[in-house]
Amino acid sequence: MKLYTIKKYAAVLLCLAAFTSCDTDAEGTKYDVSGVEAAFASTQMNAELSAEDNGVLRVPVYRGNTGAEASVGISVDEATTEEGIFTLSSSTIAFAQGNAVGYAELRFSMDDLSATDKYTIVLTIDDENALSPAQCGEITVSAQRKLTWENYGTGIYTSQLFGDAWEQPIQKAKEGNIYRLPDCIMEGYPFVFTLSDDNQKLVNWGLQPTGYRDATYGMMYYSPTGMERQGNALLFAMRGLVAVPGGYAALYSGFTEVLELPE
Image 1 (cartoon, rainbow, N blue to C red):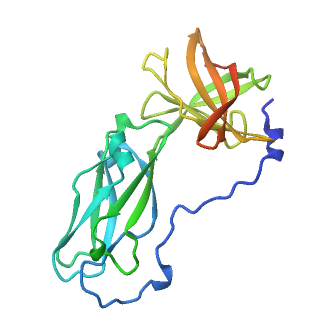
Image 2: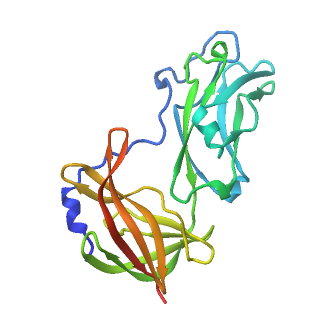
């Protein structure tokens, strides 16, 4: 039986709004100032990326003064540049006369996106003199891959750490050789991983919460050190990690989690 009984010890999670508006008290106010008056609509934007995006993530930038053609400089944070997954198409956003919106375009390849990771991108309007009085000159974009899940069948999940086994529904993404185990250790916490095309090797398993909370250290995350396939079974050499100042530490290690795939 699954460890749903553990959830009564879990703290209630607070949901954060995906959209944080800028200077909402000033909404509708008219400003008589010169310049472009450019701003992002919010300080945060969430995006799910799919093949339909054609490799472009568009982030809108608005302006208040539309009387003439204009442009503003824009830049991306150093961490995003070094990672190399998202790149700015142009360091300038152009506004046609009469148009109140332009777009920063971030190019990417779907092949470079992990099945489980979220990517944080910070965009900044470089010219402070071009900013709107709302002063939304910076936006944090949280982007992740959008996947379409289909039923793959029911397998058996055996947890050495928790000393239990259960029937486990398995889903597979239409977009690739990506699998999801919904409500695996705890209800509401799926595991997502990617296998090689021949299903023999583990390609990706990002650091993922199990839903189990240790009384001292809080949420425990699973991070495999490797995978071996034996017939129809996938054997994950696993670590149970907890968050500590500056990163993560192993609370448990040297155990194996096994997923037997359906015939």
